[in-house]
Each structure stands twice: as C-alpha cells, then as structure tokens.
Image (cartoon, rainbow, N blue to C red; front, top):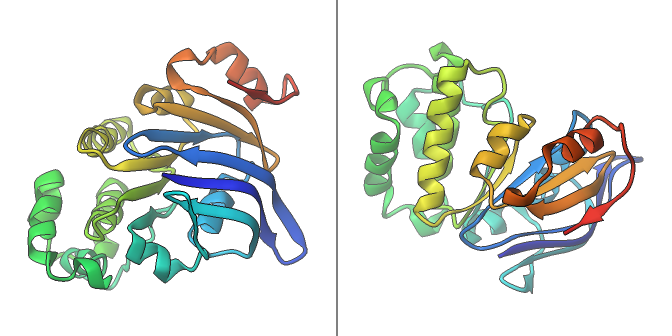
Length: 238
C-alpha cells in the first residue's frame, strides 16, 4: 500500500498541497478527482519525487525518500498527463525505455509481448515514430511504457484528456483489465462519472486539499459536484 501523511508540496515559493493525507490500498483503484488547479498532478509528482515536498510517503508501511529512481525500482510507476512520448523515437523504442529499471530488464521480451497483447495497435505500429501517432495511440504508448516497468503501483494522470469517446472507452477497458490483474492503481481524472465507474475509493481535491474521501460506490454525485464546483464548502471523510 502507498500512503501519504501531511504532504505539502509546491514550486519555489508557491505551495500547492496543504497537509494532504490519503492511501492507495493494495489491489484497488483509487481515483483522485477535482477541477483544474486542485493539486492533483502535483500530488503524483510529489509521490514520484519530482517536486520538493514535506510530510511522509510510505510504501508498505515503510517511509521512502521519494527519489524517482528508488520509487521505480520499488515498482511505483507514473504515466504522466499529456502522454509525453519521445516523438523522434519509434513505438518500440519508447516501450523499451520502460524496461530500464534493473529489476525488470531480464523480462523485457515477455513484458513487451504483454503490452502488445493489451494494445494490439502498438504492435502494428512498432516501427512508427511516436510523434506521428494519434492522441489515443500516444496514450497507449505512455501506458504501455509504464507496464514495461512491471508496476506494483501505477499512477495514471488524466488518461482521457483530449481523446475521442471511443478511444476513452478503449483506454478505460485496459485500466479495468489491469485492475482485475491485481495492479494497484492511482487515477487522476476530471470525468467523475468514468472515474467512479472503475474506482474502489475516491478522493476529491480542491485548492490543494482533500475535501471528500469515500468508497466510490457510496458517492452522492450531486454532493460531489457541489464540492467539485465550489458550490459548497467543507471537508468530509467517510
């Protein structure tokens, strides 16, 4: 299980997260929802050691330093917002970069076949430059690259951003499959309906704080949207 306690993080003199505490239970999908500027991406970046932070980050109950390389070796992997593929490299080369951590290099061929089974379109385009792919295909490359790192915990940031509904459906079908295989998933998503459809647990963030934490199946969407859109203030834990 990945857990954060009293996490503060930001950029230079600008603080973004204010004493955030939450958990990503093993084998579950935890959704982080909220408007733009809520601090969702900063939360994931802090977890991966990409921004300075204060507070505790624990993996299986043990504090971790939050250095990106150490987290990758421990199996905590992030699929960033905006896909962020290497445009001048082929699909296969992009995927190979995901197998760089020492613990998964020997399984590179096996993991590549698994990625191609999950994303058949990538196998068809394995020699194609990533910069020439559609948005949906680039998102598949980013997710496939994450899977090449054999994640215990996969943090996925806004996978539906800018994609056509048919591609969103395909991407979330893969997310459901990964969850069924036992991968612990943290998901940032602005579409509350689709986030709740796959999540076990949901946290709503706004202005760098967690305002609502609930089991996904018990969420009142009207109440959630009131908090999401700042029509109501307050903090609720359930």
